[in-house]
Length: 331
Image 1 (cartoon, rainbow, N blue to C red):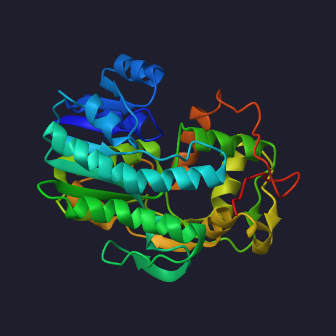
Image 2 (tube, rainbow, N blue to C red):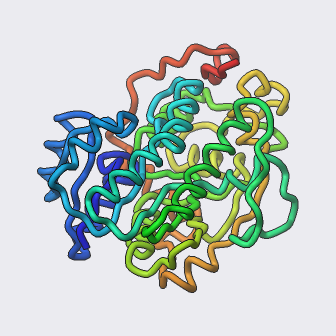
Image 3 (cartoon, rainbow, N blue to C red):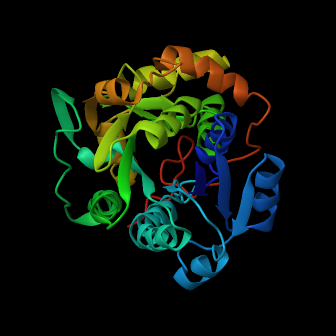
């Protein structure tokens, strides 16, 4: 298939582009910068330069492009400013999805895959219940976290209801691998500046190469109107995950702090105190996919090696927990 990807040079877009080409597909990547467009061309893809949030600019950029499928893999999570990251990602999931659906029709696509996330099930303690795609998404609530949940729901609703397009949603777990967010975590762990709530919940992760492989499988085999949980085989508490990562790096165990200390950083507090156990059985069954790194134990050594030469020289994130973690927590 010929695939138009928004976010082709991003965290998942980079391994996804590589795997799509290896599987015999043609890739046209959308990038906001000429430098990233050149990087995509060097990887064997075609590229167009456009701002997905500017509909006229996007439609002009894809004029003359033909594609069988469109993938929305854009977020704004590469920034260390949490407020900007959330607001930017919300816009990409709402306005960006609408604009990309218009682009999909313009290029003659018949399939559309969108990036979703398991946090759409709700930022709270789900207890021992194993979450499947049959479980409903959370109802939006007030505040910044509620806006994020609403935006996650919006991208899925738009894609599933789009006329003449086969819509598929990929509900990813937390990414880790060779990406800017993992490099930031590596740097913070080495400096022992990443606190962990002593009562942190269970989280669901997915190694980036495995997420990309699942996306290729969903392109080829995913059923229209369906969502798939793309997580590894074993939920893990934040503390155990970060302890394992620190040990792999030869760093000291992260600080434990009471959960209330993270409340001034609403999104981080909500994320680290949310507890959920998410099943990937549907993706395995219907897509014929399984993660090569089945748990964080196999994935963390791969991520540590991938980032061993890519430390951040410094992480400058204006903060509220002096000497430990510094994040712009928003209002």
